[in-house]
Image 1 (cartoon, rainbow, N blue to C red):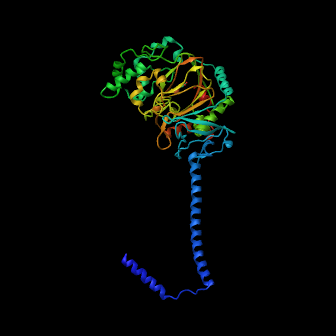
Image 2 (spheres, rainbow, N blue to C red):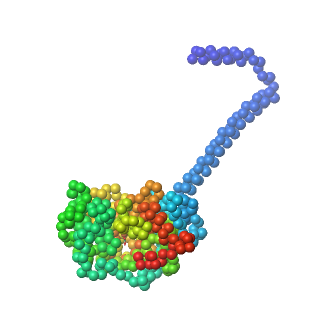
Length: 478
Ligand SMILES: O=C(O)CCC(=O)C(=O)O
Ligand SMILES: [Fe+2]
């Protein structure tokens, strides 16, 4: 402190040394002007700096909002171009626009974002209007789109299905076929990867067979318990026969809830082709699915035909997955032409389920483990109808509403990854009236190269040009 004072005094002394500035007005003003110009320059620099920062912030904010809400992108379908998805304005998209995957490009499948449960985003699936899409769950990634079809359009789809003719699934037409599947055959059906052993994933995923029959919860539990208590954690054919103890039956008419197989009964179905040459409404359904999912149209175009199902009162199906676990030994039913393996499984990357009417009562679609992280422990034993009462999420059928969910996770590189076990779902008992649905499955092989080989194969043309695939015959009778 003392030092400070001294130096201060020194300074004061020094200042006395200099003659005081002339005490006239002009001099004082000049000094004043110099000071204020320095101040205003500094002030100007600071203000400009803040102004620039402000502008930069605004630009950054606008960019953030643009890219995070997908504004502009939300309303357009994606088409593949030069190796990356490119936004194509809705009005430029034609029903025949195709986006072919090419082997030299590492294409990434666009995937919708759920953000959070209850989040609503606007989507454009038909020109000149938008729809609300609500996130129902994140695991599985599941959305609801009311008004995907108008009520009139839904009626037309039901009429088209009736015109085509609705049939019972082949195994169910003859109740005498009940005992026709032996345990060996059933084992072979369950053994998805055909390695001669039943793994837990196989039992979890294949409670659903391609013929529309379902294993009962009783049988599933029995097999699962046998598998869990087996030290090896898998079941050979002999072990399978031992644990299933002869009571196992696979197909046939319903046998009540006494623990035996109960199958989807009194439901009839047909397939409606969505490709070129079909009814314009069905082509429009395909285009809406393409625009909603933002997948390349070639993937949607080459997918299986829409399945229309009519459920009568008293009908339900057990919980199941629409797709199959990814396994190198499996080939997808849709791409097996381009594969060497003999084991074919359904590869359905996503499902778009259309409610064609509002069932009078019951008939909800239940996702028993949606967003439930404790599912492993509690669900498998409850794959019977109880999943309806206990299910985490139940969606009531409303005419024209569509559900979209992903049956597979992403593999982290923008392609199809593991089966999402949380996509387990089933339809609850229709307690009054009828229920009509249309299921559109987009088939994508988890093996990207095989998918590409397949697409090259089906779009091959004798003149050497790859053309829009003419696959009418190919899919007509799926
Ligand atoms: O009808 C439903 O609610 C679900 C139908 C379904 O899951 C299916 O057909 O795979
Ligand atoms: Fe399903």
